Length: 567
Ligand SMILES: [Zn+2]
Image (cartoon, rainbow, N blue to C red; front, top):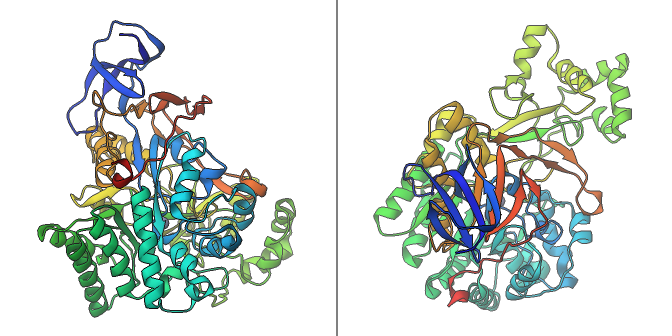
């Protein structure tokens, strides 16, 4: 047999959790044809000596809905071994929505997800109204990796109810119309339906995003449509129950009932939190109880603390304070000059302790607590806190921040953890039987967080440095587990006859690299970018998309439609 692609001399870790073995992988027609000793020729050969050959990773929690129109590669996820993503999480999708109403849908995304409206305006050619039409538009786009898409509740509600979506409960007529759109979307291949009920999701005007106006009964009925069809997953950015046990129990009870009465898989992200260290455990117990009762529920877990990545090039904790506010508006070089001016410097240090009382939402920078503000001088922990350095140098913490920034020409990053601060909790969650390791939020919070590297963090930090997870387990967590939960058929394992989504990496060097700030979004909007080291090749549907993490020019990615569209 003549192969299209031959990956020779590598160590296979096939995604099942089975121990590694040495073999060659032959690819024909986008699928793995042979795993074993291969003597035949191939059009293209990769020598993977010293490298692991694994199924491509799946990130099931992204917001690439807008980005897919201007970035076919799917950065930054593609740089971390990802070959398939799921977008449309947390109620945010770009359909259904007519072009004339696009500003309403963008309003849902702009602040809640930190995607610049000017980038969306410049980068998206709007060619749809309904969700099936959106899927067709994505289908036609050139793509480096594979994309599956949920329909989001905020878009759906805005489509059916217009401005009322941001203020009113749905009428019976609204609900009937929404249910029909869910039916149409799932039949056309939407992978499911998503919503948000968290106060972290607000519009720039400080209103709740549209899905937050829905009653629980509205949510139940919409998820019920997927139950009737026997297809689709429900993802929810959960309610803010606080620590009130009655509210927690009420919410948990409704989630469990929803999963059991509809039979629809229910999923959500969950983090440990230093202010409520055991809150997450009740959600894992809920998943276990729901599964024991015959339902489907799984938790999305992150591989490290959820950090804001702050810098003078993006945002800092002081940006809204008097004195700071005026200086932070200036070009970076003028800010640098201001920080070197002794009088101004003193004023800034004094002003830094003030509070504006403004409500902070989502992934916006928090007021500084210097014990929980870390200097990001490398891509993986350990990090030292600003408080610790201030104590050692006998300086004010704000002075430490200013001096570090000046020493790096304003390019110093600081990490402000919002959740999952406890590494042992993070480890317990990633190893939990009801977890899926995902939640990069890639495509969203583009200047606030940089979690596209959570997969390479798992491989470098937990596998190599801490030896807390075997490489076989880690590959299973990143490939087969998410591919199975989201029903990406033929993906997630390296097996003969399965799709040739393959990642070839060096297990001794794979790691996230330092992030950087770039202005490469449409209309010059800024974002954080982060690549990884140790990746030799990323193969999607049998074609090499990245070689040493550089684009080869190939665009073999596909739209992955849900099961009803495939029948
Ligand atoms: Zn999200």
